[in-house]
Picture 1 (tube, rainbow, N blue to C red):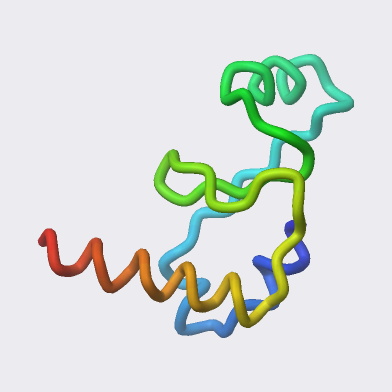
Picture 2: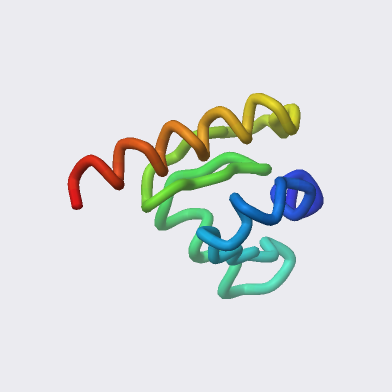
Length: 75
């Protein structure tokens, strides 16, 4: 999953803080349970966007752009 995010264009990546929780480590497993997330999952601003699936790059890019547009409207 991190590879899909890292493959986004640089002009989008500048707005992203990628945090990867490894569920093979206790803290990652606990975080997964706290969030009630499947594996793999991707969250944007605390909301699950993909659960138990790896998105195609274009779909992820569209979701991130949509989020960025909506967050800029709130500012």
